Length: 266
Image (tube, rainbow, N blue to C red; front, side, top):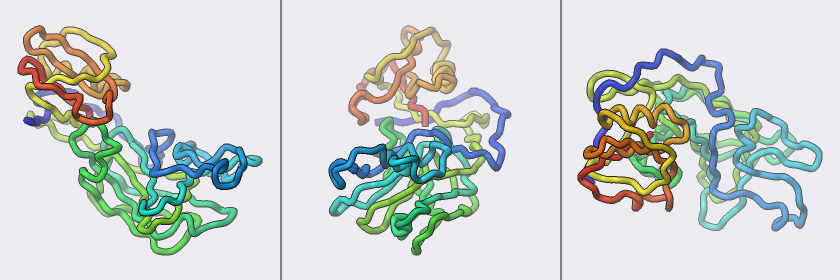
């Protein structure tokens, strides 16, 4: 399958992220598993969702509700938690808060990784196919870890992954970094990449159509629409179709069509 990076003039963005801004706040998250108190304790209370680690609150308990991300223990599965920063950043600092009431062992023996995803539409399932930058290994239990990543640590995802089969508990993750203005083939810059498949269409759900002079203009339209995952350009009709997330979570949603080019937003 032929791939290409979008060529030509896109946009030059002058805005920047200040060093003390938490770029992980309220961003999409995912976890290997979620502890269920109904099954484990026979109790019903709010608990353990992966989003609690980026909600801006470092509180562990509110009444009977446990407001930290917490995985379950599964045989032969390493627990992990990840956040999608929704852009590519040079990551400088990662601040991780654990439980303060008890159980510091839920935040121990883990790697902290920054990941540049592979060129695929289902980014969560392709984390291990991307470029992984290892920021830190935490051997001992701690209620809080402030990590300074090595220079040139760059990516879109931050993942915290245990090296054993025990549970992982995280109350808050704060990430600091600067957006990367990655180079396009014309030498001009943009804050994100478009990973393209020439001669292919995409069966993802359409969220809008319009005319475009070329695939560059079509891809720019997708860049500026936060709901857009892929830009499909019909070279024969000059129709640009903006599309959302994958239908089935894999690249099987791609199909060969010599009249079309599709670009996924990285």
